[in-house]
Length: 171
Image 1 (cartoon, rainbow, N blue to C red):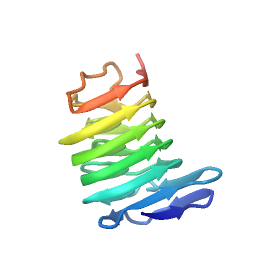
Image 2: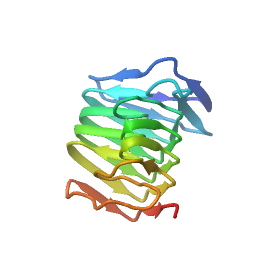
Image 3: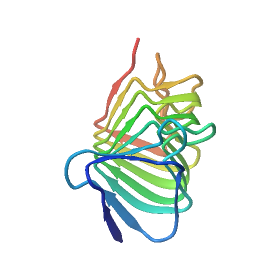
């Protein structure tokens, strides 16, 4: 796959990235590399996606529908050592998954908000694997699939696996 290395700093996106086709890796080899939706738009829409994201912070993304930071429809994605911070959507404030396989390793989801379901993540269909990740103060107003709300963590369906994760829910 093609490897794209970001330089430290923040990239403010004026519109969402359309991701499909050729496999690629997006990585931050040093420092902190941030992709920001500036509170105006989603960061990426993958249909289908074949990508790996490493050591990247995804912040301030906004969608009035599914997937605040990422809307993944088909394919496979890996997020390794990534941070999802203050993203907002109707469903899946950080990541919305439909008919895809998504692996999340050593990542953090903090202060993401869904106006409906999936404060951090929403799995409509496909498979979601979460390992060694942290979920802090994510919110959703309704409950479905893997949601973190102010007062509950819903049971996870068999298509979601999680191991060694820390979940902090505000009481």
